[in-house]
Amino acid sequence: MQTRPIPLRQLAAVVLGNALEFYDFLIFGFFAVQIGKSFFPTASANSGLLLTLGTFGVGFMTRPLGGLVIGNLGDRAGRKPAMLLSFGLMGLAIVGLALTPSYASIGFAAPLLAVFFRLLQGFALGGEVGPSTAFLMEAAPPGRRALYVSLQFATQQAATLAAGLVGLALASMMSGVLLDAWGWRIAMLLGASVVPFGLIMRRSLPETLTSHSQSRIPRLSRAELGIVVLCLLMLAGNTISTYTMNYMVTFGTHTLGLPPRLAFGATVATGLCGTIFNPVGGWLADRFGRKPVMLAGYFLLPVAAVPCFMVIAGLKTPLALVAGSALMATLLALGTPAITTLLSESLPSLSRSGGVGITYALAIAIFGGTAQFVVTWLIGVVGSPLVPAWYMAGALAVSISAMLALRIKAAG
Image (tube, rainbow, N blue to C red; front, side, top):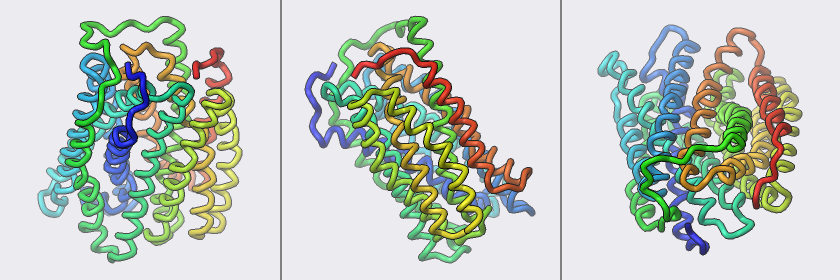
């Protein structure tokens, strides 16, 4: 196992690759309205949006499979080959999706291709989290594990920020017609353009797993399985909150009626706060322990969510949308790194990549992948713009219960 801190450029190869994969994956959700018009033209705008968000959710179905296949590859062949495979597959998927013709050009083949490439995206991203998280924890100096793991989430939020800035720029420079036609394709291809550089950077990585090529992955003990289940429940609130926050652009345009160029400000605020405060949360978890930091962030977030959405829905201004999104993203970021660090520390090295990957992917697939679809559907049924806040609060209550049930002290 890696015993000395890795050089900064090699650490950057892991976290920047992670950022690029999440940029490509999330850009689909940010341009849900525009993509819906290209692939799912219907008489009802709400129906087209639901079909697009359903396709967005389809990508989560294959994330557990990616976590299992590529995650276990990371435990047998090493973290490095697993990360190279996931990154290459993501590049193939995003190029294919960006170049898929519209429904008007090739008919029903368009949504079928969109679904296929979305499934491939999900498989690739599901296989990314386990090996990269294991790598970061194993490469970390003593007492800085949570800080290093927090870079996984900080760069995910940096990807959110980048996607928001790209969306804001395109929405500001292009008319609605052009944005619907091919503006969203530009956003995807911008991410795909850096895939070759990411592959080159990752090829230079060292290997942090020294005992590999095992014929069988070790079985987890009952105590380890119990921690995995509790972490899965903790991640439920995390993923629902994360993807509800990623929904804020669609919420701003579809529910509040704001222009896209103004609604994208919420994504910029969310990404910026996540990029800054995830490392703060990791540092706090190393300093004060995993459980106290998790509880602090996740107690405060549901308390803030309902008032934030009340103000946003009442004022319907870009400032309210941005400020509310920033506050919720900050609280979410403070508690997130401790959960994944605790999960990683609880697993033996020969099960770490696959265990983290599968657990995280299951949480994302079950809870995160359905969040935007459920929220949109409930808003249509209930007619209240406060639905996202109540949905987040309910999910976070489950996470808090799991945190309170946790009876171990994680190693630093």
